[in-house]
Length: 597
Ligand code: ADP
Ligand code: MG
Image (cartoon, rainbow, N blue to C red; front, side, top):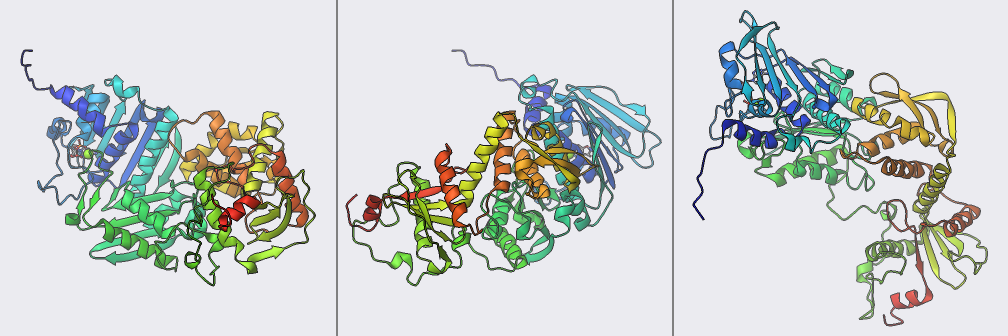
């Protein structure tokens, strides 16, 4: 084979390649333009989006502007006014790579209209798919206006991978939300498809967090301020009672830059792990100031990832500060076991001697559940059973052979039912998990039969949200109406509840709606209606269900067991955990080493 000729790629091709990395999706273009506005010292930034930013993005600032003779350079690759330290250590600006404008210009139609103070008029420059027009005088105030139209029209390969305009809009809105949290001293206005999502003045950090996290979160968050080896942590963190279904209300800012950093996320999660139920997430707006030499921000072209020289130090700082805030010791222990926490066995279970070859905690799972779930379930059951003060024995009806789950004997920790079947098998039921599944199945049946009854509220309830959450929820209004939940917009950031599913008339409408909003926010991926309904059903069921910790009457216990027997899929809850464990005589004998496996 002939040795191939190596040729240089054209500037246009290079920029299109870079565009793929720097401007992955509309949200990235929005982020780059807003960062430029902040780097230009703007006191006020306005972002106007249309069609999720795919159709149009406009970012207007009142910053330092770009002089007429610099405009052409601004859109050249690797041209920047910002990088002063070529070792890349002292980076004081959000941008420094000189890649954003040429990348956007290569993939879209970009127009810059800019005027520095002291220049008579503004000047404009356009780049269409990489082709640059001449610089022309234009009308405009001091500052810069950047307009991006038809994003990715010149790079169809990328265009194909965009999600729905709604999902792209959400990601772009979130990018502005993050930057607005990072720069509270700058006024921000965000408009998407002609709706004003937020319009906030220059303000103190706490006020900005209040405005962008929603009023419910704002009132109860606690201020943080801690320093460790030159790294300072400030910001606000929610009390344990303010958990959410997703991490949507978490913001991390490092040296003024919004970041998605796994070290910080993990530290936050660990700090709350023993006080927040599994699957729930804390609410926090954290800000770190790190000495430039202890940080590398040049990890990825999008600059949202970074590397800490001392990740362990940062983790300890965050965990320590939040633990002090929550007034509890730092714990790196195993997963939370809330219902068992107060119990201290006289002899630690691990010290109980077992006959050699006996299975101990490594039990063989009963045939009806997966091995791991069973092992976990057993470990808990074993602990619970040796804690007599929390058990409540009841006068039990005699077990009927027709009832495989038997008759109730006791309620343990006000959370588990202990029952005995006619053949002597021992049955343990997690009352919340079981009831949740039953409710979900009932709601699903009602829904499939087209008769989910809505219960109109005598006094409609208004629920406050972060502005983006409210929109997300309202976008699902039709789906929710089919489930008996009727909502409508009530000004920016608020939703009015007119009716709730009749089955849920005793649930707290605000709580219910908040959980649903987060359920819908969980991913950027467009979720099929059916999956949404499923998620909504599971959430509704959870709200309707008997809480762990509620004392049940014998009649309630029996009713629960009988309904479980009659309901398909009742052996696991909607989260896939077992709802009950059953130990036959043979299994008990194996556990006690009376019989080989
Ligand atoms: P970077 O931000 O990494 O320098 P960009 O391609 O985003 O690279 O921008 C190139 C240059 O254009 C910037 O360094 C800055 O001098 C100028 N510029 C871009 N946007 C603005 C703006 N909104 N106001 C003032 N100058 C700007
Ligand atoms: Mg930039």
